Image 1 (cartoon, rainbow, N blue to C red):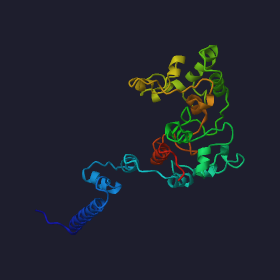
Image 2: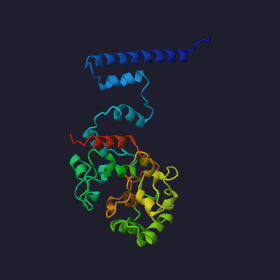
Image 3: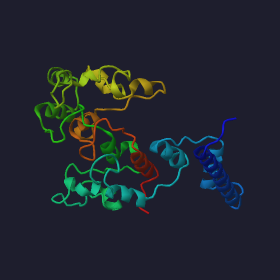
Image 4: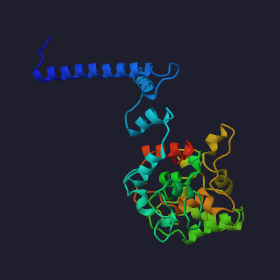
Length: 297
């Protein structure tokens, strides 16, 4: 057997000490848990049981949040959400939310949206179109979550690119007019999705959205025909469960239609890289707070 040098010996001693420490810690946690309710583990005790059984995947921030918080239904408090609104880089590189959204007065805060208080978050913007940004219990329908997750389309559009260009206005007019399958759609709107630079990006919409399969078409959105557009997103996947696709056009309501929103609304905070993951750990926690009812206390 080769001789063990000083460094190897120190590493071995350190490893032994760490194992002893962890064993003692786990034992202490289990003893403490045993002192609690006999029929229900404490959150800590349950966590360490799973750790001993190698049931926890905690490699990376999102995995830690998933394993230790989301899967265990830990309540997310407004105090934590409030800290996110005040913290730079909380959802990705960029300023804190309240830098731009700290007042219901639209002359002092963009869109007259106050994210500095729970009441302000529930109220949403006061500047038209005024609508809630939080739907308690439904994070997927909450505009605040969509603004953090969704990139403006096409990818690479400049943050300050106009939102009332002829192409975008044509889409809005068509939707607000009832989103009919008529000459306006056939000869004015549909061709826009096949032309590069019409909406401010370098690629045509149908380069990424031309079939009901993902890949190659992101979110199974197909913009090549009227019927395809009206099928919405994830139509192929949801059809397996007998569900229709998620609408991207709501006739008569452009402001509520994901298609129009994606052409006009920037991802927050300003300056985020379009390649940033949508499921940032803090976005997941914000979603869970909303799912749990978005309580202010």
